[in-house]
Image 1 (cartoon, helix red, strand yellow):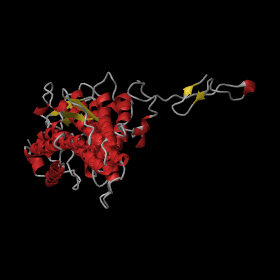
Image 2 (tube, one colour; image 1 turned 60 degrees about the vertical axis):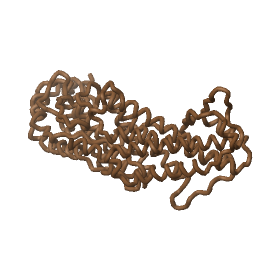
Image 3 (cartoon, helix red, strand yellow; image 1 turned 180 degrees about the horizontal axis):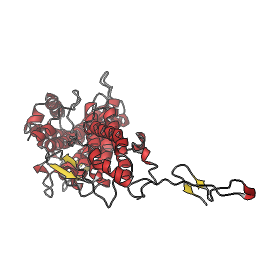
Image 4 (cartoon, helix red, strand yellow; image 1 turned 180 degrees about the vertical axis):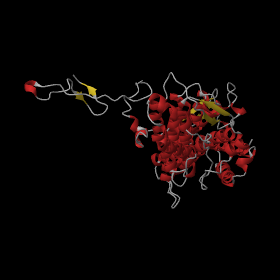
Length: 465
């Protein structure tokens, strides 16, 4: 229950100016670990080296893991995880042979249920650390979501990429949070929030908070002002709806371990962005009709960007009166979407306690209601039978995940004194080092000759001939 409360605490990493909260991933907890007892024996047995000579290497390795398991919520924290993951590659080559097991156990806790899982596999350690990389990136995104939307978008794309990295490189996970279906759901959630952040970024570019942007004075300008935003909002609503479908699926019973706040917030945002799309389209029709005075160019734009299903013996709206009726219809749909979002918010205490969330939804609902009431219908338009089936979803720029780039954080092998890793690794077996003494043979003319062979390369050298 305590872990569930932590996962549902949306305000912990949020930017205080955010209009709607976003969902951060929780860190997987792990127990402290000392590599030396298990791996020092391997140094003596496999490499025939003195364990005491490498004690400082284990001290540094343990320090790196400690920094990675409790990362700072900053660039440095992300770097600490990358550095440790890069060292795990060297560790795998040096000490983890396929035919040999170690007395080394990695203890990790499920980020949703808190259940502990233990494995000897170093791949399990890598996957859990990569999951935490995604979690830290998501928390960094939320902390700057509204003040620095570009930075927030960058972190969300990196979080999305890290989750995909785990899903593609690790299978048969024992914990629920790393099951393939759950990782797919998590990746879709991060993708949806990335598009949400991009929408906010585009919105701020079009309408800075310092000085309101005046409305365009042409039909095309109004279309770009309203309809591009409407189509983007419809696209994001569809993305969140897909996440909701996964969360509400009966196959894995997500509701048994996914926080209730997550489920509610995803449904809320589905309706929120759907309402934004319809409100923008209704505003476009009202403003465009007032600007042009004729319905023909407005009707062409509306028909192109919306999907209209016609009832029997009805036709598409073409006159000014019919377009106003159509705008009133979309304003009513926007009201309905915001009412559903407000209802969902009221069912969840965590969301209800966020004043900025309720203020945002109530303000938008009030705008939709005012617009709906202000649209006056002509008597003939009320007899037209038609209804909308939605807005054609479209996003201006498709987003791609930023998968982990381990080359950004190069490291040096801590155990380089064991020899070049291409030769001296856990896959190659070498005999115990022996000392031999060679004497040169006699050369032509009685002088000192050669050893009878030549060497190539640096230590460890090879016999060339």
